[in-house]
Image 1: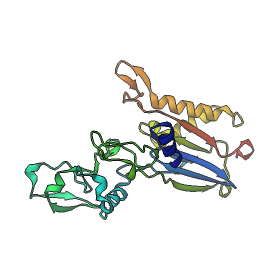
Image 2: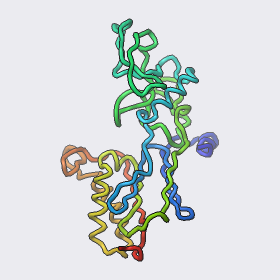
Image 3: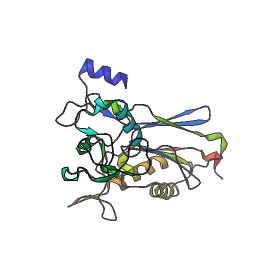
Image 4: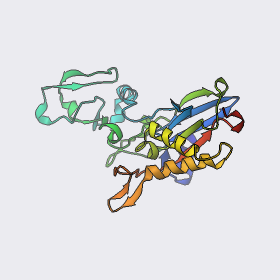
Amino acid sequence: DDQIEQERANQHLAGGCCALAAIYLMGKFYVANAGDSRAIIIRNGEIIPMSREFTPETERQRLQFLALLRPELLGKEFTPLEFPRRIQPKELGKKMLYRDQSMNGWAYKKIEEDDLKFPLIFGEGKKARMMATIGVTRGLGDHDLKVFSSNIHIKPFLSCIPEVRVYDLTQYEHCPDDVLVLGTDGLWDVTDDKEVAAVVMEVLTSYEPNDPCRYTMVAQELVLRSRGVLKERGWRLPNDKLGSGDDISVFVIPLGGPGNYT
């Protein structure tokens, strides 16, 4: 993240990205995630999550706590409190459900003038945005990113620190059908863990266990199924729902070799 900031200053390069990395070291996989990509292990048909997405929803309390410690980061446009919906001026003095950085559930409060500001976190699911700007809360870069038509910087809320999960390969016997799947949000937006596992099993069983191209074909099939087919109304999945409009990158990494097949 510091290197990207130096390049921005020296070479005038802007931008940012999420990061998902898997490192094999001394019999263990270390999976580090900063962003909304996802990693899962499929072992004997079982799905083992190896990451979680970092979004305004999943990191609500961290973002609100930072806003509490440094209110100047919000400018005069945002409130750190979360409400079920936007507050209207006519609702001043009335009671409304809210929650702050210390709350998992909701409570009532009397609406005050500051509560009319735009919420730090607004929206649900993939539509959730932080400061009405970005839908991911960890990653690299984006040092120049600001709230639209303002001088409020987003970067102080974006963490470059990944969450790391460890998987000990020596604890299990792995066959050639056991894999680690790494994918960007373009895959997971339209395909859930179970659907990915089903595609993995479907494609792998159509190849010989010692055929190395079988894993590449799984990754290719996952990309194709997530993108869908181009029709008059855009890219569509077999169920006629919209295909992924985001970038789709997929890695399928085998955890066992032909000699381990049982």
